[in-house]
Image: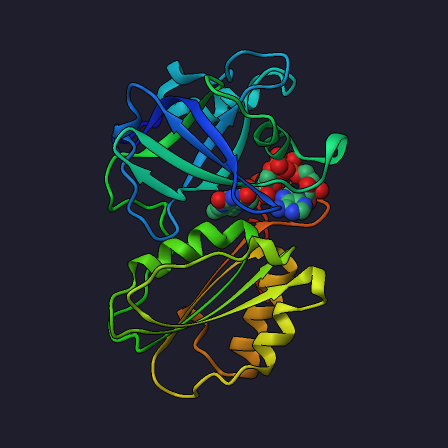
Length: 282
Ligand SMILES: Cc1cc2nc3c(=O)[nH]c(=O)nc-3n(C[C@H](O)[C@H](O)[C@H](O)COP(=O)(O)OP(=O)(O)OC[C@H]3O[C@@H](n4cnc5c(N)ncnc54)[C@H](O)[C@@H]3O)c2cc1C
């Protein structure tokens, strides 16, 4: 499917699914070739292809080689697989975990959230997965000499933030802000780093943008910031760091993981039309 050997189309099926908090379903995938998927950790993302409710398996033009994307776009949207972007939450031999946020409910849920809400053993998906841990679908790349890390995420970027924290070695200083819908969505974030984690529970009126604006972030040094989540939140946080605090814009890695009111197809259409994915540059 992908032309270069960096990624491969890998068929997976659900081994089990379990709630890991009020807002999230952890789906564990297996499959004959699941171990070909080689996560590099941190914020490792991948493309996930899901069947429509009337289908047994996702319809993906895997035979189109390098041209799979063009071929996929030309297929009937009602039949071609639903393509979404997700993060590796964990990987063990024979198993790959993905944490799906169950946003919306019933008819209001997006197709991926709806799929995850009812995922059951044997359900089939296809992923475009990395074949090497050093792959281009990892965005967390601090420059050498970074002496202070700032990580801000909402619940969709919680698996990525957890992956980053698991990756940071002992002796690194990291300030972390995570916005979640409910108190029950908070979880342990194992790390060897010297981490100061602040949870912001939106259901309790807590606001991540206000929290970061009011935070005591050391000035100077060589900071590196990683921000991901809902696009408006990401933009506001980036502005605070770059415009108000003078953090070098090149040291701020920011990604809109979703945008209120827009489906992933809408965002993809913007990219194809020449816009910036999910976010506009200031
Ligand atoms: C690099 C990257 C990594 C990501 N990793 C993860 C991950 O590990 N886990 C995860 O859950 N998500 C992750 N996301 C976000 C996920 O791809 C989007 O939330 C996606 O829109 C979900 O698809 P859907 O079919 O459920 O909803 P869509 O059909 O895309 O959207 C339907 C409607 O729901 C709204 N919506 C979408 N997501 C949310 C949300 N979380 N909360 C409230 N409303 C929403 C949209 O604005 C739209 O109005 C990631 C995104 C990116 C770019």
